[in-house]
Length: 293
Image 1 (cartoon, rainbow, N blue to C red):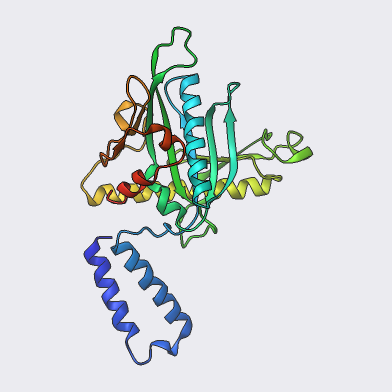
Image 2 (cartoon, rainbow, N blue to C red):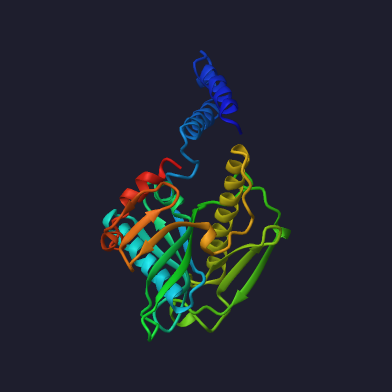
């Protein structure tokens, strides 16, 4: 919806709120007040789910062991930021290699404005360094993709109208935490939205039903994010590919350790030479600059 249309709807609701019989129907009045707050936030550039929790997934791209190690470095950077800023973190799924790196890892972040704070961290991150996995100590470039979506507490048609027949459910044995129940039954769940091929997985819960619910929450968040990005791109007259390849062309931020030290965001041009503090969780400068996006 265009901003002018939002303002018209807001004006109409505020006029209704000022009428003498506004509180005659209390339930309707409460819904009107809720909608007014949503419109005010949307007009101000605040997303509907910005105040809520978030789900973050980090995928390794090109670079083999180096890329998977970079995903681990990014995860630790975010963990340190979460700890310093009193965000809660729950591990939902991990696919780890023998070196402690991650092929992919999914976490849930809880706390005030978690999604609003982190949503613009989504994109491809690039690392340039001397590879610790190369005997010749050659300089190596690695890529990891960060995906941040809102956490859906409840799933219903009022949020997204999705046909159940468009969802494919795949079961497997869990390899995550959960005690003796793990690996004995197919408790891990992967759900796929067939029209978009978006998928989500959960294996951190003890039961299949719990993992399915968690995976569906993540999937709905992904679909919402995709629809929101499409809406924004259409408003700006931009074309956005439905699939973002993890490669140089789509990077949002570079972390350079060699031959010099620098972290630079390519969207905002915010940069710092203190890469050690960034990897220690000091990313507030980047997050503040992202507010202009």
